[in-house]
Length: 153
Image 1: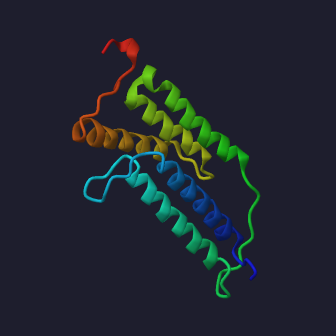
Image 2: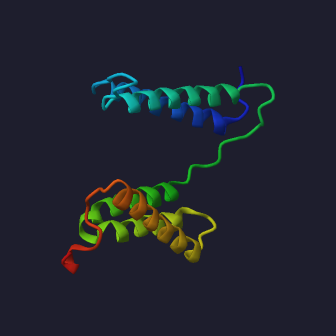
């Protein structure tokens, strides 16, 4: 069988590998049952579903009717921007608080886009900060630093 859509094929392989990795990693935790789930239940089944999805995508890329697509050159700059912005916001979370670090995460990772717009990035960052506040602070009642520590909250 010939791979016609190389982009879908390698995406499927990546999803399959990540799914198998998560499913295997989740077996180290107690599974529980569907009625009383343990800490390993959700990641295990999420990994299984991800591996199944990856298999379907990879197999569909080899079908006769699949679109002929070649792989583009891998852009390491985008990878560095995304990993750097996630790492930076993780490091700065305790010092700057959730609101500023989430905004920075969204704004800085937007530089990875080929059609970057600072207005759109700022609006996305503001929207996600509001979403984090509604979902995690108000909805779930999670406790973590919301503002920078030097402000004395």
